[in-house]
Image (cartoon, rainbow, N blue to C red; front, side):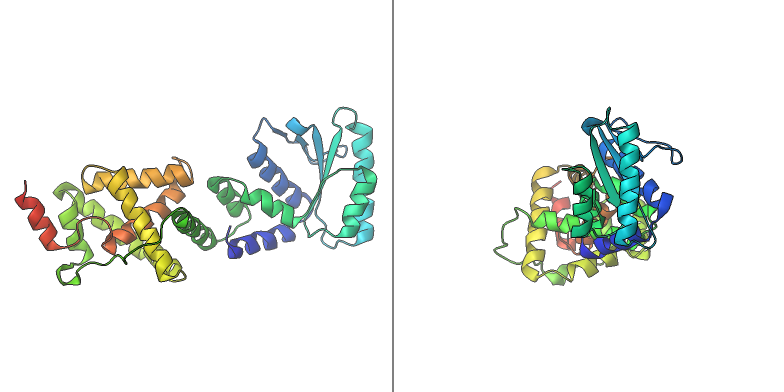
Length: 303
């Protein structure tokens, strides 16, 4: 996660108290361990158990106070641990305590004094779990916490760009084209798509413009050095040239699916949107597809 998204996650988690915090932790652990790996316990009369990590035989206890003093923390920990020992300890030998705040050395010592080796999870540890989730799982939590889509989209686009930089070689030459023969985007669509697909392609481009998605890509790229941008372009151009075949529409679909499987899952519509936006942006910038009228004329003369 990038820092803005991480910070907003942390802020929202800290505002959760009582059963709201417990509900969030339950949702988080269901995503991390799955329905078979984590058992949900009723909220009231739970006898000191807020859920069970089945594979670890571990009972969890959640504490989301509005005003957390060390005295309140210790009292709550004592009560929850006593209930755990009396009702769950024989069958489930491991215990975990989870709080909605940054943990202190005194809190760590308290939990350790109750049961040696017991994990104490605070906001930093919770954020680490969230970062380890799949993209679509992380988005579910973001929606649960009512985090605005702007933070999610910027984070996902950033992940795509950072991955494109990994393993990409430094560009020997900047990617430039002869601007004399350049044409506007709608004309470019016309020379790259079959007639039956032109209207659909223009509509897609228009929607990405109106929604601000293309501007988000442009704004985020602005924060990278020119050499980094060139490396990303070379990586995509290489993948386009070596991993796709057929008409431009087909090749764009193949490249989209390649990145979708790599970064998320085939059913992740939101991530599909972000990947598609990046590729359409590069199409608009004349990186992929036929770029000038002469190219189309030459291609037609070869048929």
